[in-house]
Each structure stands twice: as structure tokens, then as C-alpha cells.
Image (tube, rainbow, N blue to C red; front, side, top):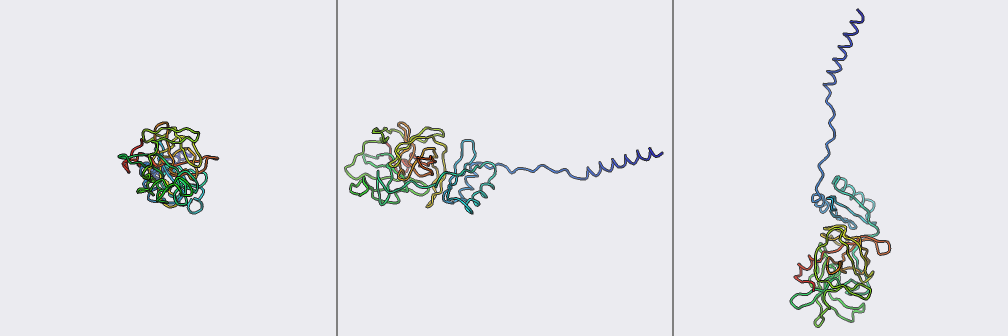
Length: 292
């Protein structure tokens, strides 16, 4: 008798447990927000981040790499990381060595005002001769010279473009016909330049500059954006080539191909660094000139 009562009680208890379990909704797995596209992430960064010392670019795998230098600390770094966290999985953050800056300085090569820059490429249009250099050099000085004492006049800047772009065109003074589109290699030899083109990621490149001479590396990204202290420049080529103050405007090239003009970066040629370049094809189209 007792055993039958116990069996009935157990059955009733089990049924009640099943009913209660059915009444409690199962917990759903958390739904991850959709991964933003590189275009959407870049658009958000353009709108929300203008801190000097920051930069970003889209990597070949579709992720966006956000970089910051040694000046981005404290509340600036917190604000930056808050933005990058909100943008989800398609973004990575790195710290650059040193300070992200334009490469201008007082010194040699081509001189204007109190700064020294580097000639990029000689170009021409309808029998008139010019040279390209960085836009941030062109907005610093109108008249350019061959020497620091400003004794030998070279030419005058024509419509520099900076910020957003970083290119200038200097019109050679009457009587100067430069020796074509050659680049000095700082070893007693020069490289003839005959064609301008946009490089691909991984392209081996050289950079020639009046401070640090000739150095090489590879293209690590395209369409990069950099926030300098006085403005933003977009559409840049990012490379592993080092550069230093005074190298601004200098040529990025490989064999006979012209790729870009030195804009800025971080680090130096002792410890290495990251350098950004204005694509030369864009500058040539803007001024209607060509390498020769």
C-alpha cells in the first residue's frame, strides 16, 4: 500500500517538475551585433576622431588599423579607445614609436623661409619646368632656394595643397631646365624616372631624402588617413621606410616608377618607423603635369 502511494507521489512530482520547466523560458544566446564594413568604420573615424597623433588605414584583410603616437595619452587615449571599442571586431589598435609629425626642418636640399624640404620629382607641362614637393612645405614658404643662405633662387610655389592633400608645385625660375625626372641615390648615382603609378600593398620601394639619404622598405597600406597637429591628410600610402625631418617632399619610387612624395610619419632611421606618402599620380593630375 505504502509503495503504491510512493510511486503515485513520485509520478505527480515528476509531472509537476516537467510542467514547471516548460513554463520557464530558455535563455537565448546573446546576439552579436553585425560586423561593420571597413567603409563604415572609416566614416565613423573621420567624423569622431581628429586627435593629433592618430592615423588609420584599411588592411588587405578588410580590417581597419588605427594607430596612435606617444602624445596620445590620458583622456585622449581613453576617448580614442572608447570610439574603437564601439566600432566592434573589424578594428585593431597599435601604438607607433615616437611622435607622428610632418618631416620638415631647417637645413639643406631645397630651402624656403626657415625650413628645409626635399625635391620630389621634376615635372613639365608644355615646355615649362617644375618640381613637386610636399604641400606642407609649400604653405610654409613661397620662395625656394638652392642654399640655406637664400643666395641662389630656385623657384616659386604654385597653389600648394595642404591639409587634406600634401603636395606643392614649384615653378623653376626662367633659365633653369632641370635634368629630367631623375632621383639622386646618395651614392654618386641617380635613378631615371619615366612613369608615375600607384603602388600595391607589399611593393618594394625606395625613399630618397636630404636628411637621411636613401632607404628602402615595403608598402604596408593604402588610403591611410593621418591627423597632424595642424590638419588631416587622407589617401596616403603607408610604408615601413624610415624618414626624418628635412626629408619632406622627397620621392618614393622603385626603378623607373614614381609612387609618392614624403609626407610624415613616426620614428627615425636609427630605430625604424612608419612613413606616409602623398600619391604622386594625384598630384600630377591636379597640376596637369607629367614626369619626363
